Image 1: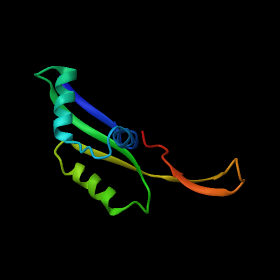
Image 2: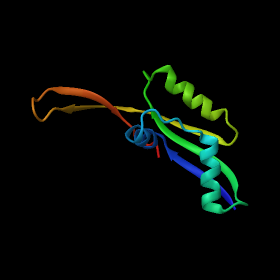
Image 3: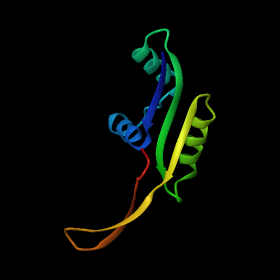
Image 4: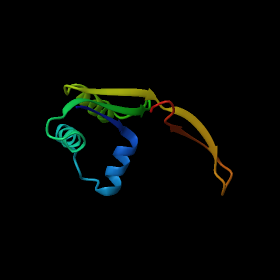
Length: 105
């Protein structure tokens, strides 16, 4: 059996932060664990697809992380540009801007 892994980058990252901000993920070990947990000891890793929305002004650390994932055999990063939106504060009525993921997964 071949096992492919699909990761929603933003939700995965935010979940890690809520759990423990200092945690570091070994993606190769995680992929091996998921592959064997799902398909058994004879299962083959078919690839990991990491989906994420990226802002044009994202810090270099984000792009370095994504490039590092792509350098791993079998890892594929699917980037989409975050969409700029505006909102209005319900308390004070002030307008504000934010970005959100669209068309990522």
